[in-house]
Amino acid sequence: MLGQMMEMPLTIGSLIAHAERYHTHTEIISVETTGERITSNWGEVGRNSRKLAYALRKLGIAGGDRCATIAWNNRRHLESYFGISGGGMVCHTINPRFSPEQLSFVVNDAEDQVLLFEQSFLPLVEKIYPLLKTVKHFVVMGPRDENIAQAIEGLLFYDELLTTGEADAPWPEVDERSASSLCYTSGTTGNPKGVLYSHRSTLMHTLVGNQPDGLALSAQDTVLPVVPMFHVNAWGVPYIAAANGCKLVLPGPNLDGKSILNLIDDTETTIALGVPTIWMNLLAALEASDSTLASLTRTVVGGAPLPPSMIPVFASYGVELLHAWGMTETSPVATINQFLQRHSALSDTEKTTLRTGQGRPLFGVDLRLLDENGELLPHDGKTQGDLQVRGHWVAKRYFGQDKDALTDDGWFDTGDVSTIDEDGFMIIRDRSKDIIKSGGEWISTVELENIAIAHPEIANAAVVAARHDKWDERPIVIAVKAPNMNPTEEDVLAFYKGKILSWQIPDAVIFVDNLPLGATGKVQKAELRKQFGEHLMDKGKQND
Ligand code: AMP
Image (cartoon, rainbow, N blue to C red; front, top):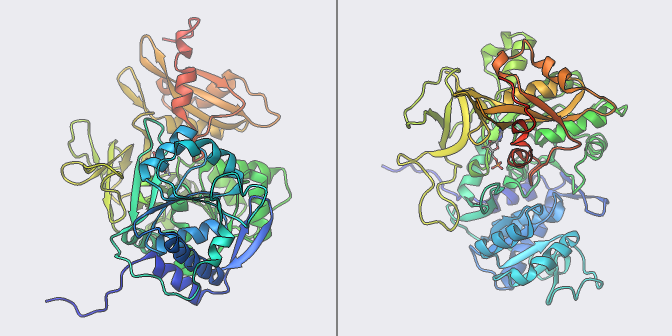
């Protein structure tokens, strides 16, 4: 017997319709690429996105067609998210930090019909223009500008395009299983791979990801997604903000510590989200300012391991760090570090230790560990293995491929190595590509990095494997000194003593001005291995 309840499709159109209707006047603050801050609201974003949906349809764009964006986090990008997906098309967010080859690859692979981009990216678009095979319409995300109108034949301007749309037409009916948005993985090895989200997967992530033990964003919050809208849909924040009527602050292109600090203080942001490098830069700016981060209560940290030494520093400003884990393939939030009731009895030190892990799965996400022979490993908090995941918002196959990317029994292999305890608290030990095998024993680069970053005279550090005659691989530290500090290699190595088993202590420290950051702000360890992987093979630098 079937149940007798209403069934309404779980669509992105329904999200923005809700925000437009019930949170009409809730503000959206947008930092434009010009630096200007403009204030809009969910009512206006809703109207404009419906105009965009119908304007695109009038251009001949059909349901399911891919429409790409190259843009920072701002108001027009937000409207494009809802306009494209809500209108039944697929919003393909492109990472502007991709190389020109990767950019043209993803546009052609996605068979994008429309490319919406900010004016500042015009030189980039002009460069790849001759390589683009499918794009019929190029749209500058701004008002008409006669100075650039001839740059590309038939160039359209977003604000003009909206005037051809319809503000009062209802959102079209869309099957909740149909594709809504497309995001390519960062592509550190080989070409980027597309992950095609559905309306249903996005709504499931929106609903479950925002439970009290999830991100827990509310209508009382002012939310600043520093994480870019081209990186896994800004971790789903635009959708969660629409469902819950959050005030949203979209930071534009300047994501340095000082700009973010000013934005938090000026807009009274309560919650901000981003990768650890963002928060390291923010702390540096904070120390040089007289700000007290008065409004900020929480930051959500993910995308790379949270350095534990940051936790007490943020706590001294009354800011809780919430550690979450996920991937482009998991939409992304899969685990989040919210405590259980019994953890309230823990000491501050024990709580800090627990906070450094990546947390436990949200309802609807399942995790398991396997050894190299594919045998299941226990969830005892000690045994480490290959992490696999499944769930309502986990990818099944990559875009354009004819085979699922899953194990025979339906799990997605994450490429991460972790432990899981009996409550499901998961700790990422490393990426399987980064972990060091020294004399047959595993060494976690994450653990070694956390120690180096905790050194008061070190601003940031990465640990990578260097080739070694006797041990195959040994860890070396690539470190950036803190401003006005001058630690030596010996200082940093001495700092490891007593914190870790002696054979795990790195063999060398190399100081650099900056660590190479990838397209999503993560340290590029492959690049460091290329640069320094032979360091110990030179000039008799090997220790026994
Ligand atoms: P991406 O698809 O670019 O978001 O990258 C996903 C990968 O980032 C994961 O497989 C992890 O290796 C890493 N990652 C994401 N969140 C965390 C985290 N909280 N701690 C450690 N690594 C993380």
